[in-house]
Amino acid sequence: MTSYKPSDRPNTRIDVADILRGIAIGGIVLIHFIEHLNFYNFPEPSNEFWAALNQGVWDTTFFLLAGKMYAIFAMLFGLSFYIQHDNQAQKGVDFRPRFAWRMVLLMLFGLFDLLFYNGDILFVYAACGFLVIPFIRASDKVIICAAAIMLLQPVELAYMVAGAINPSLSPLDLGSGTYWGHLMAAQGEGNILDVAAGGIRYGLQINFLWAIENGRLTQTICFFLIGIMLGRKRLFYNEGDNLVIWKRILAYAIVGLAVMLPAYYLLPESSDIPCVKHSLGVMLNMWKNFCMMMIIVSGVTLLYYKTKAQKWLIKIAPYGRMSLTNYLTQSIFGAMLFYNWGFGLYRHCGHTASLLIGMGFVILQYIFCRWWLSNHRRGPFEELWSRATWVGRN
Image 1 (cartoon, rainbow, N blue to C red):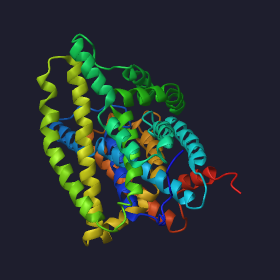
Image 2: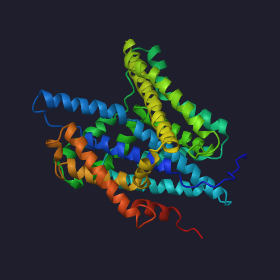
Image 3: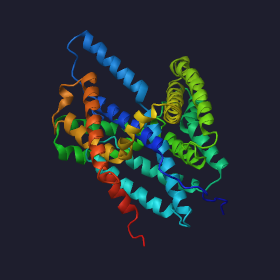
Image 4: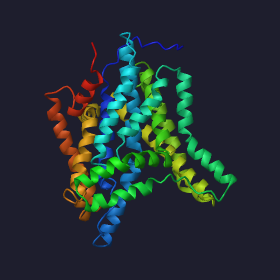
């Protein structure tokens, strides 16, 4: 039994959510390009200046974007689930079976992505999507408690306790690096079929094991649940005292970051127990990223609704509306640019050049999105996903 009741207000399209989604997918593309799409192979800098510049570009990009963009993406995934479910519930339709089918389709998109890029996140999101289906009609307290448990990083907590009891225990290592190593030859020397075969054979192991080892799996579930709660409370609409709430969230996030930054850099080093040191580092990194993500989300929301920046921010929305298309195309073209089967730019491009190429690619994607959406309601992969989601509907 459930006490769930659908909202009595329509869920209209949320422009600020599209803007945030655009920021997230753009950041993800930049991270992937600077990483050479999970192929960490770079030319030696020609002198000390380029070595220092490349290291600065790498450190700055990862500090600002890594972990935060995926967190925003996951939160908006949960928000979209809520909106789709609630819109159908208002019509008397139970969307949960259709959402489960939608996750099966997302897994197929993920497998397609693995043909080009072994770091696919779509299959992992789909698996986590199945896990949050029971929560869509749960009470607010249940969702908040579940999100809090996931945010506490239970895997890392368990390993910290185990490490304290047995100091000789090794940090969590499920073997993702071993599988990852199997793909290096295909990326650096093989053809497109070698990369595709390796991605299908090892990609799922890499992504799921890495997500568990680095706290990303529990974090993803956490942000799905947070997105559902934000949808329930309609916080992305300019209604009631929502902007006051976002100001408070921004203030709390800034204070949290001020605490988490020194904690992340100092606390793990205070332990001589390898397992505790590693798990504490993973945990604090997730919390640091959570605070930074909330600063971005609340800051963009407030800028959109309270300042003249709205007229500029809204220009990002088309890029966010085609996030699935942009994600898949960055895998295809990114692999073509950096892997051996394409242009093999990993041999020539350091971090700075790779970031600039990523920026150029985001601009090209943005131009395509503006053009495409001037004649179509959805992006090409978004349209395919939508049509397949509702196949068989009377």
